[in-house]
Each structure stands twice: as C-alpha cells, then as structure tokens.
Length: 236
Image (cartoon, rainbow, N blue to C red; front, side):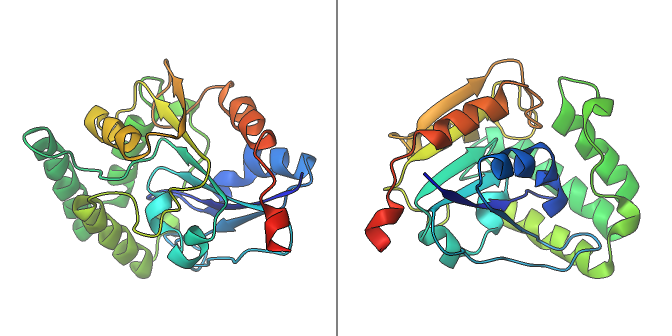
C-alpha cells in the first residue's frame, strides 16, 4: 500500500524538523512526504497540497494539528498526533499557570528576547532529559519581524483553543502518541484529547517528554501506518 504524508510542525519549529529521521523513513517505504511551513524563521509560510495516489495521512507534532490547512485536514484518511492536544489550556485552576506562562512568553517576544525565550522553551521541551539531547532547532537569529508576529499570533491561539479543529476527520483511523513526562502539554489536556478521540489508537511513551526522544517512537508509528486499510482505492 502507498501512503502520502502531509506533516506539520509545532510552535517555534519549522519544516526541517521532519527531515531526520521522519522523511527518510517515509522515503524508504516509497511514501512521499510534504511538509507544511508556518514561516517563523527564514523560510516563508507554505502549505503543500495532496499529491496523486496513495492514502492521505496527516502527521502533526504538538500544535501542528491547529496550524495545518483545514482544507487539507478535512480530506485526510488517517491522522497521527504526536504530543498533541485539542484544548491547550485546561479548564479551571489548572489552566491558570498555563495562561501565566503564555503571557510571560509573549512578553519576551514583545521585548525582543528571543534567545532567552527559545532557551527556556527548549528546556521544557527536552525535559526530563537535558536540553543538549535535542537536535538543533530554530535559531533566534533567523526569526524575522513577520516571524515574531506569527509566534505571537499562535501564542494567542494556544490560549483560545477549545478542542480539535472543527474540520478534524474524526471518522478516520487516528493514532495518538502521548509522552507521560510531557512538561508542555498539561496532563488534563492530554486526558481531554483521549476523551475527544475515544476510538483512536493510543501509544504512551512512559519515560518521554514533549520532544518524544524515544527510539521506540518511529518504529511504532511506522508499524501503525503499515497496517492502515487502503481506503485510497475508493477515490478511483
């Protein structure tokens, strides 16, 4: 079976996030992968469309499911959510801390302290592992004025999210990969995602943080993709 992958990165990341090992793993199977780009850094915003042939699969990291083009999302035939969420800020008292964090991040952006912001954020992304375990990410020096504006807009969006996108294809196969020690996505937000997708397949990485730095991740995702039913034939 042939798949075509549409991948979307998360907040403060870029399309290059997928290059290794994801794109290589997909290519080894003969599955083309097109990567969306939000345009925080030196690359302009871009949202590729679906190609011809193959089961349409969205793979989204963190906030990526909220950044992908909704017209592409609604026609997906399978979805993989990596350390993702519907609502980011939990309801009630649990959400107060998250709102303070978002406000503090926006203040650093307004003041131009990108290096400090990215350094703090990467520590939380890597946790519980040390930050030097992370691959090289978006450089603060590469962020333009337009990139800062997009970062700020998406922080606002994080605070406003109530659920998965309205066009999310809930009827298709979904894989939810969750990190048990995620310092970015609140446990209640992870629980809410599981409740929103009760029929989804679920994988919990017990020792992993938000960055999902676990060698078992890619083989598990690839195995799940390989067993998908071939629904693409129904379009021809």
